[in-house]
Length: 323
Image (cartoon, rainbow, N blue to C red; front, top):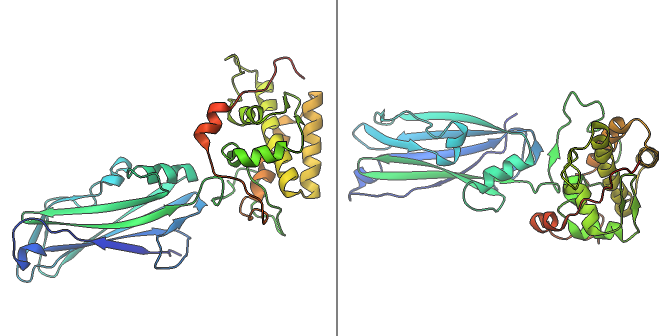
C-alpha cells in the first residue's frame, strides 16, 4: 500500500503586475515512499532498502478566463535519472484544467539515498526536489522534501532472495549488532572494542585502532604493498573482517549462543588456514547485519561518524605469508 505522502509547495511570482498574469499556474509536488508510514506533517523518511520513491506532480491553470501555456517545466534534481522534464512543453491547459505526471525512482541502498540527498548542494541527509514552472509573464515552484536514514545506524536492508544466509525473517528477539560499515566510520566504538584487548585474526594480529580500521577499509583483493591477493587470501581477508566485526559485537553488545559458535569456528579456520572461509564469512556477515535495527545499549556512546578521518589513519595490518 502506498503511504507516507508529504507535500510542500511554494510559489514565487515574477514579471508583470496584475492578478491574472501572476497566478496563471499553480503546481503541487508530492513524494511517496513505498511501504513507509509516518506522521503526515513530517517529510517522508527512507529507512528500508531497496526503496521506491514515487513522485507525483499536479499542474493547474488558474487563469479565470483563458488558456495558460507553460514554456518550461523542469525538475533539475531528477534530470540525471531521466525525469528532468515531467511535462512536454509548451504545455497548454484550458480554463480549470490540470495535468498530472508521476515518476518512480528506485534506491538500492542507504548510500544511494545519501548521494541523492547531497546532490541538492547540502550534505544534510535530506533532499528538496523542486519543480519549476515558467510561462510568459510569471513563474511558480513547488517542492517536496525526503529524509534519508543514517547509513549503518538506522537503515534496514531487505534480505536478497538469493542469499540463503540472510536472517531477516528469523523469529524471536535479536541481539544488538552493528555491521562493518558502522565500525569503519565510528572510531570511538571501535576503540572501545579494542579496549578489551588485541584480536588474533589469523591474517593479522590487531592491536591498534589504525590496524582495525585498516582491516575494515583495505581492499580484499590487494595487499598493503599493492600486490594482488590470491582468491583464497582474499576470501580469508573478508572472513577476518567479519570476524573483527563479530568480535566487537560480542564484546560491546553481548552475543547469542549461535553467533558465538560461528565466530569460534571462524577464528579457528583463520588461525589454522582451514576450509570454509566463504561459508563462514557469509554466516558472520548475516549475523552482524541481523541486529542493526536494535537500539544501542543505554549508556553506550558510539561517537559521531568520521569517515574521512577514519580512512586517513587506516593501516592494513595483514602480513603476507601468515596462515
